[in-house]
Length: 97
Image (cartoon, rainbow, N blue to C red; front, side, top):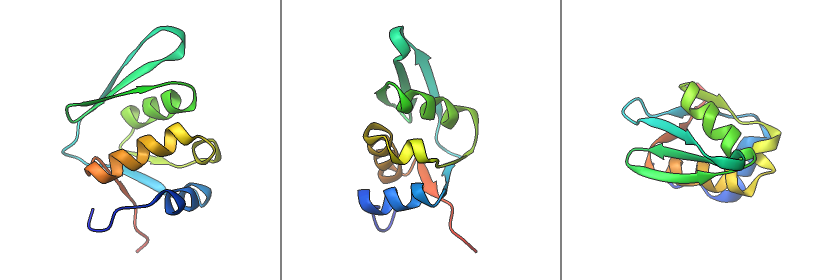
């Protein structure tokens, strides 16, 4: 992205129910592990996810767009994951037209 999104801005976007779009050139997949842990793979990188982040990661793999919800805004691990994926260009925030 031209201007990286900061954590405070991402929290506000999540509180507003913003929509995240997957980059059509990116590839998302996951493997479920033990005790609710999930390993997310995106464009050659891997992320170990648990709790709310594992649920969010499954949603990312299942749909080309995901609306941010309150539980995402409340989860530091979700926000960290999203920030990294936004900064890498694997995700983008849908812009209002």
